[in-house]
Length: 392
Image (cartoon, rainbow, N blue to C red; front, top):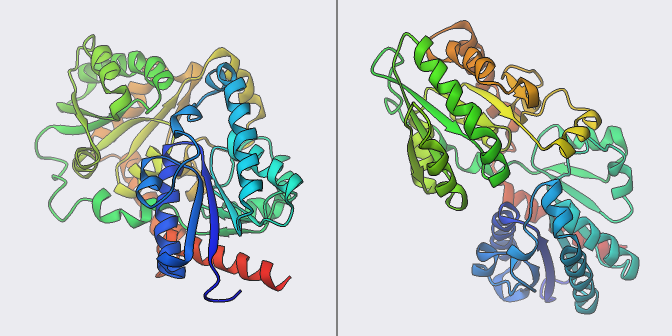
């Protein structure tokens, strides 16, 4: 690959988290190849647009989550899949990078591979093939040349399942440990003052609507049983903050609700324990050193899908650790009584509390990637795949 040859890289994301990953990748690619040499196209949000992308359409048109929501928007999503694939094929980029949101991005990648097989395709963020629908892994080989994994166990999972070549590039959270973790003395000693309890009912309206009631009732029971007083903080993302406030008005234990990333990380650094919806937040809490109880409820339609799940846990931190140290109360087990029972030991210096802290101390070693930042490692793999394509 000639060093002065202009490069066109298309990046297609499907939601806000992918937009953030895409923006960091764009910055690292510009640092590696030179800003003037690169041209970008694709689909992204505000973060990618700030790095120079002109998105084919607003990300909000396809950023829907959950089985029911996807079904409701399916006709418009299918239209955008065709439109995006047409645009990629017409542009003839040097590479296509798809980021997460497999219901959208993988369909784009399949269409591009069928019509323009010479365009290399990298997938940034693995689908959860290790949890359910493992048959997706070998099928991906037909349209993904290389997979960039965020979790350290995923390369072995794809090797075992027959997936595409996979490299662990690191989770973006490991770049933010200084924000997530408390400075010396920032987290009070456990025997001083009220216990600081984080409650995290999710970032989707469906999660908030299903979890706020049992969470509030669990806190009421906890207040009756706990020998120590506790204070509750809810870090809320903007688009569900008002719904959280409205639903929290019925709680007997009144929370402090904070918005914004800085306030969220400040609450994490001060927290002693947490009650959280399953998701990336469990990895955030683990890296911050906050013992937790994890809960989740889904719709009746989605409940049928649980029988397809093959993973030993739905908690990312448990999966990275390789042991189920964090209690998870799912669907019919997500009751106020069981939540309160699981939380109570975490409010003091118990064996359950210490067991989680000891496990969390292993995360840095398990997730390390060396001196590179995750986005820098991802950009290096992009370059290697481009060079391999030029030599072929």
